[in-house]
Amino acid sequence: GNSVTQMEGPVTLSEEAFLTINCTYTATGYPSLFWYVQYPGEGLQLLLKATKADDKGSNKGFEATYRKETTSFHLEKGSVQVSDSAVYFCALSASGGSYIPTFGRGTSLIVHP
Amino acid sequence: ETGVTQTPRHLVMGMTNKKSLKCEQHLGHNAMYWYKQSAKKPLELMFVYNFKEQTENNSVPSRFSPECPNSSHLFLHLHTLQPEDSALYLCASSQDRADSTGYEQYFGPGTRLTVT
Image: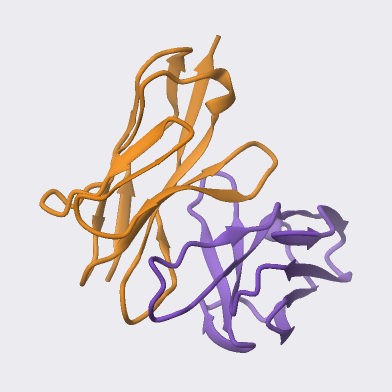
């Protein structure tokens, strides 16, 4: 079956630090990959996505590259802000078959001023 | 109103009460989902509807009863809940198409449920 593994949190950083949140996956076929973000008191919202190998998704300064050879989709940001404090979820949606996405457990990010 | 809306945002209920959660999506999607999000636990998929037909029921206790009268509305009827059912209940929708470039989901803000 499909699975997504994310690094354990919380990740605690100072403002303007570099962020990496690791995500690896197991899937049959060629999945689409996503990062969602959940701010306190809100639902999840799509941050970025990539639908095929070597695609780079980007949004709000965040980036992630679909690496088929390492089955990874790590999230990066060059300079985090306090407002980036949230929980980040990596997810995949397999092509064909079931359209229902598989989520990782989420990684909490805390950014201090 | 745009996106996915959920009402109420907060609900406190006793174990003998009956209540309902409502979700509405204004995106023209054909698939809708209920998730349970508890502290320190992974996101739990509860139910999935596609074109108003239930396609997934992940061993959810019968005290949770979903209803999907049309592609835009989804309800979760609650009765005789337990304190461990206290959680954030999230509704989501997506467009299930064979030519879709990835089935991203759009989430509502959730209903924070407390069972006393």
